[in-house]
Image 1 (spheres, rainbow over the protein chains, first blue to last red):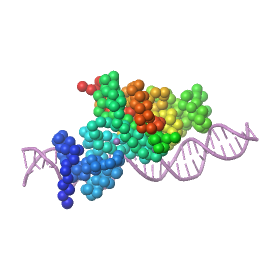
Image 2: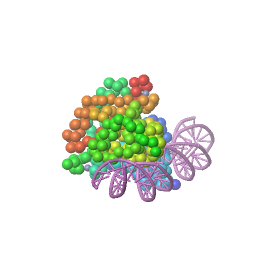
Image 3: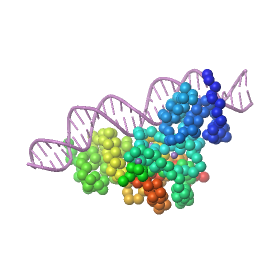
Image 4: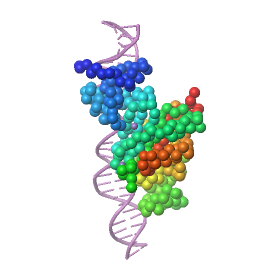
Length: 148
Length: 148
DNA sequence: TTCTTATTGCGACCGAGTCGCAACACGCGC
DNA sequence: GCGCGTGTTGCGACTCGGTCGCAATAAGAA
Ligand SMILES: [Mn+2]
Ligand SMILES: [Mn+2]
Ligand SMILES: [Zn+2]
Ligand SMILES: [Zn+2]
């Protein structure tokens, strides 16, 4: 069996280590895929890419790892308006939340960071006495290019 | 075959009529279920309730009708954080959008109307030149009773 | 190195949602 | 009220995203 390629442990790997969570070959492969992703990936895309690193990774391991990362609050799960089928998309959670806009005509996904969004969440926590762990704002409509 | 029970045509039924969309028995059953719902229903709950009005309604007709109502912008589709399985929930779209909060411990769903949310949407339309047709803000966390 | 325990691959499974098709019924024009 | 064309329906088969139980395996603490 080939050595797992020595790679600088990414942030995700470190964050799991800090929490005392066991690190394995398949996990390293999946984490690196998520960490180096340049767009929102669904589970089957993550699987395919992870397999180019570790041939033997199984579909269920991908789902189990995504479940782990969700529970740890390290990734977000998105619908992106279910533009293509019923699947979900995943992305690393970074400092500030962002809004996702999906164009219903061309399918383009754009992102937007907003101070107002932060205020809205604060208002919610205050007025509703609700402790927010995840907040997902997804919008569907027409992007600047497709709108007329 | 029994006459479809004569019922005052609800708002949804009227809105479809205005748009010149054909009205049928199964549709009337499904619309009335959605219109009289007191909580967020998923497709199988809608089916079950619709069948108490019209025994013969089929699962696929429910999905087709939900698709129609979505395309017409008359209902919203919700994840409610997928607290139970992967299904979606539906509710009539009324005047002002509202936010959904799902308690990850007790499962309670609460709703909240916010002026800030409206401003946020306006800001988005202005700053991103994006024409919003649907906006879904869903929040997961702990409700006032479960938080400590 | 040993030992415990978490994790994995596998295969079978489940449930949500879709689709093609032939039968049906809505509602328009007569 | 009576046809007729077209939109809608029920049905059954299917796809696809995601889950689960289990025996084999590998982490990592001691
Ligand atoms: Mn994003
Ligand atoms: Mn969803
Ligand atoms: Zn577009
Ligand atoms: Zn609660």
